[in-house]
Image (tube, rainbow, N blue to C red):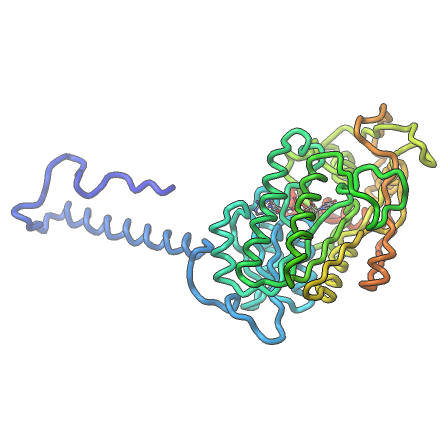
Length: 417
Ligand SMILES: NC(=O)c1ccc[n+]([C@@H]2O[C@H](COP(=O)([O-])OP(=O)(O)OC[C@H]3O[C@@H](n4cnc5c(N)ncnc54)[C@H](O)[C@@H]3O)[C@@H](O)[C@H]2O)c1
């Protein structure tokens, strides 16, 4: 908040220089007046800048008009890992993009990279807003002509969700309701929704198809399933085109090294295996702890399906292109191939060139042995298959960015290789 200090009616000395409503040209007073004018001008300029940054600033722009041949996509969570990569791909493919993000987890640095790559007017705008604020969201939709929404914004850590479940139901389920209601109110007809394999829980039969029953076992998976259910119920009586993509474990980063994954340091403890692996390689943590070596898997460690972010955003663009009014498409986005934690760790050692210390511990309660997808539906219907399936290559690409961005999107560092 701005503190304007003392008001005009309370001069410092308590002595008024005004006689009979007239101000004398006292030099001290003159300085005072000039100072006040300067202060007011500064405050006015500041207010203008703040207002312009706020979604409530009502200036019609190219973003507020539909344009023949241009698809304007609202990317929620576009400052985050997957959202920023999706924005890059959309901009490369000539889409117009508006990012809405509250920067609770994402990075303004990622938005800056994108803005520098696509500085032309009408390509990309960033709006700082919280999707939990229905009024702000409504205003954003009334001031912008969106053709489609890619709804990435979410808190997304299984461990954190068990410690703070209400945060997850609020941020995922309730915010998706706001996005959906606002889309309906403003006639935005296409939704691509970021869901997760965590909605399946621990199915007995592998691989997981879209028909596999969903029994999520943690608040993250449950909140996403509830959001899916709302979308599906709504779509029964709506002509909205809906695509629900259930991602498996996302890794990698932009092959050209412009974007990467930079989660908040305080989220490290909830982090994903690739983050932990890079932190160990950089010596931020002493090593990796592999929990469970006696699962009924080929090498006894858990098996997961790792999907490269470049392939994942390709699936989004294909989903957007193939979305049809009144139709819902639900797709698993994975490679179809399970990789063990041991395999992952070896690929990570090779990619980073660091002999990461690994401790093998007992199982962690709640972990399931094997999760991998059957991606044949998305192949058959959207003509999508994962291409970046070499774990070592994906990790090498991500490591290159990590190594040259030791402070995330803070200050880039120059490295020798
Ligand atoms: N990363 C994975 O392995 C994975 C796997 C399955 C599904 N997903 C889903 O993909 C999506 C993106 O995940 P990510 O890994 O890029 O996460 P991320 O944390 O990097 O990005 C999420 C972004 O959403 C923003 N955000 C969160 N709450 C918001 C709010 N209330 N208003 C506005 N912005 C808000 C954050 O600031 C952040 O920029 C999420 O929906 C997640 O559930 C991710």
